[in-house]
Image 1 (tube, helix red, strand yellow):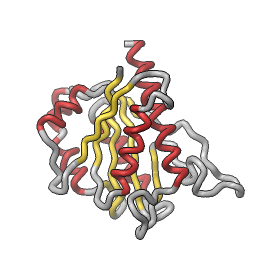
Image 2 (cartoon, rainbow, N blue to C red):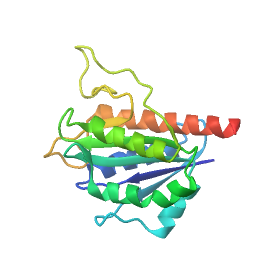
Image 3 (tube, rainbow, N blue to C red):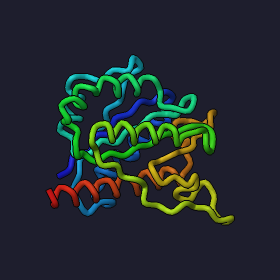
Image 4 (cartoon, rainbow, N blue to C red):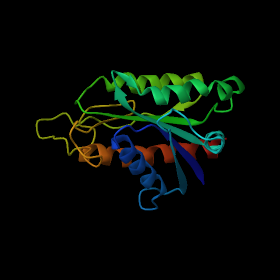
Length: 196
């Protein structure tokens, strides 16, 4: 059984809703052939996680990074934890773990790619193996925000929740994309575990 850690910060609840969607998909026997266990690690408002949560990251087979996009980058709370990950970086304890990422902002674009690129760079600093979405964009006239990958992201999930939307107000296509992404991460994590 693979252990998937979802490390994230959420300011207004939208990122938390997306994180729980990912976790539910990882844990669901309906969406995965393999058995996997997702553990949510929510960074607090002071940019801290507990020693037990650091241990969870150490023992995880995959780490999925998440943060809202604020001013074209992850929230400072996420960055504080990322900076504190220099100890596992120095010891290469996250090396060869699977990595992925997700972000949410109110705008259709909102420079969310900068946040995903930050997660990718962080993962490569740690020697992780990044997993993209593996999905074509929903780029035809017939497509709407209810379709998977309406925003056309290949590197990670770039979800949309309008500024005045409730936490559950993420576009339905992005929710379905999170489920598909979780399944892909589980599949690749299990595949590499067999090879190893």
